[in-house]
Image 1 (cartoon, rainbow, N blue to C red):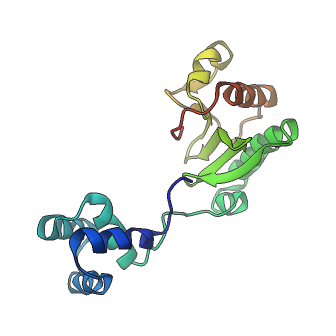
Image 2 (cartoon, one colour; image 1 turned 90 degrees about the vertical axis):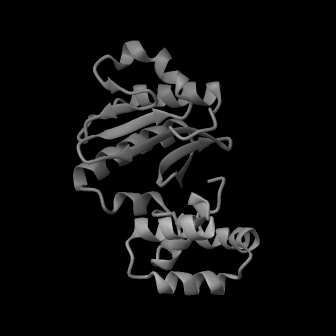
Length: 188
């Protein structure tokens, strides 16, 4: 990820922009600790001129959520998923890493992603009723529309069933096309 997921990474900017040390801001948060998240956000923004990003970092940190990172590894990502989703997600990424030995499976944007030669080329995520797969360069989807006719295709993602019999050729062709096209610079 390009940005530091640790909420404390905002603290130097908060001190500089709002003119008080973090000890002051922690005292402010202690005074409003029983307020709801939205009320704490509004308090910092309305009474102290906090930007939304700075308020969010301070509020969430004060509530014990010190990082935006939820998963460190693919195994961590899989743990909360049911057995069917785990099996399908493993099969998707196994197909990719078998075909592309240089592929690196990483966690970015709190989901499993594949990088080849340092560039993001593919990602997937598990939702309640389906999985989403995506070449990192969303324009690749347009080139594959004829092969995607049996799937629900969104602007940047392709919806597949949680018990999908993984179409390895489709997945690896999407990765190859995305790698060739280059990354679009934004998450799918």
